Length: 186
Image (cartoon, rainbow, N blue to C red; front, side, top):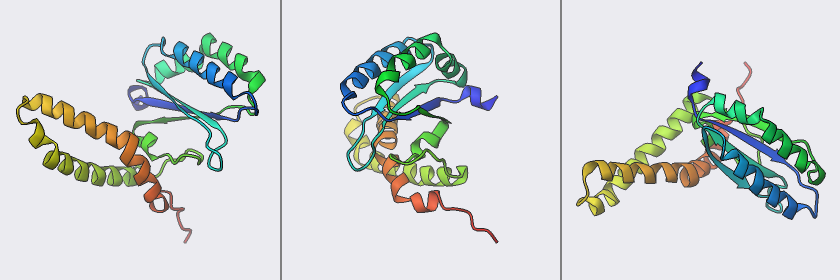
């Protein structure tokens, strides 16, 4: 299966009872520590509530493939920690799984939707084209004294970090009307 070979992300959102935020934060720290022990775990991010923008906590777990994610999702460890959280959460968790570049195209505080793949590919291609030219113009000359493979490693690392944390979230918001346009009925 193609899905078995792709990086996969699970996005879990839920409301925390008022006054239980510290308990939930401690719980997040503990469940994250346990998740790290599972094969294929690539990282965990927590998006905290923002007054007037988003009221729920969102936890993002990344795994190297579907099989390893499934092992975590069906584990007794995870089940135990979910049971521990029941006393301080106000809602059942909303769980969504995404893979590949789809993770770049989610808009914070919105239900996770993914646009058509051709739109994701076009926007990613345009952004990568601009970024690679900017990095090659301004960064590569500063790294000339390093071996070409090291320069490539540095430039590609910076590009991926910029795409993931800075550029694609903003581009997804900027182009959201085009990316998520409803298809018209004829």
